[in-house]
Image 1 (tube, rainbow, N blue to C red):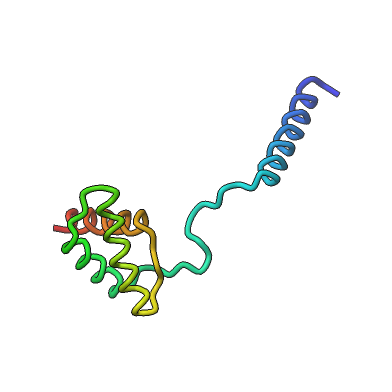
Image 2 (cartoon, rainbow, N blue to C red):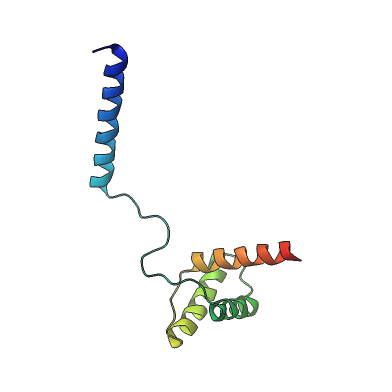
Length: 101
């Protein structure tokens, strides 16, 4: 075997070992959780109403938004969402609307 072939073989073995270790440790799931619904028009209207009423400035404010939004969602048999998801969605919609004007 040449030196180049040996290096490539060693690199492949090292990569395979790394992937096996990650699989054993349990990689953190990324992206949307299985079964999660997209935001509907009703969801967005409810979110905007709650944000307008609460006017969240920080983490605690978004926690209050999440609590009120999730009460509404449960009453309407819709998906319950965490404060991070709600904040990201609201920020994305605001940016989109600001750019559209």
